[in-house]
Image (cartoon, rainbow, N blue to C red):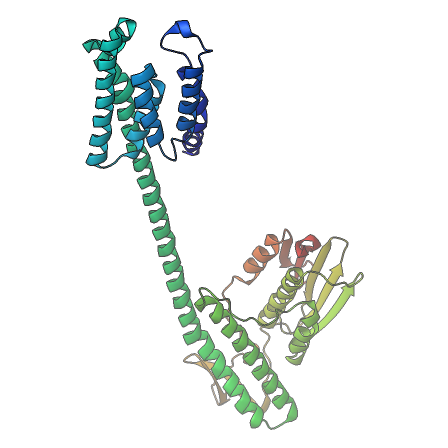
Length: 415
């Protein structure tokens, strides 16, 4: 398609010299190429052929006049082709064909008057029919076919473009509807539950009997409010189609100590170890490292609350390595413990309730020991996030006990 357009675009440039060369050959060969008349008229015909794509009427007029006068046929043939590609109404086609018929008829009269070879070529019935077909009929039909083919291709391109636009529009509408549905579900389920958690934490902070309980409740409320803010930003991204939502700065390694302090406040033993020369890396690399530590500590909270955890951040030459190790204890997760004041915690209808230990009561795990639910996609999502940066993530149990999560993130990903 592009090749045909280029050919059509370069056709007038090629036709100009071609018409000039062919027209410069006189009907009567005895005059030769040096005849000033033929050279001048051939030059005029060549210029008109070069201009024909913009306006072919000058070429048609010159073709009719030069054919009657000098039996110069190339201009009339090229003009007939352009007439077929341009004329669309019946009136225009009839006018052109009528004008060419007048020109051919005039050439017959002139041939009869001049006689000789001129009469034989332009005035005999068989040659008149042949010239009419060769100079007008066939070029005109070929021009009509070219125009029809061009219209079909243009219609096909327009239809394909329209279908592509409609397909893109339908896909965008489907994405927008799905994003809105996800946003509604997240707002109705997650935001509601987290809001309740924040409210209960605030109430517990106000009614706390001692300072440690109040601090813990305050920290839970702060974490919940931070989760609500992050959720609000995420919902804004899901609901927005054109304008990006205003996002707060994403966490990096500078926020790692605050994350570790939150875990320590919940009773987790966490220590940070930096290796190598700390330096500023790209926000993408540091954010990924932060998420690795965050997910690993989340798993520690769920499955190994009593384990001692070490977070190693290694600044290597071309890699940032983050390693989270935990070491299990004798009274690891799942171990039974007495609860203060003869109380234990059970699960009733999906809610935490506290009841007194009575005779025959079943012993249950405390709320701190109860396994937290999880989607099971945390480490898988981390692995995808790290691999997108060209790194690798390994997670698994250690031979000496405990669990290890190691992420190697190329520093070049910061570029």
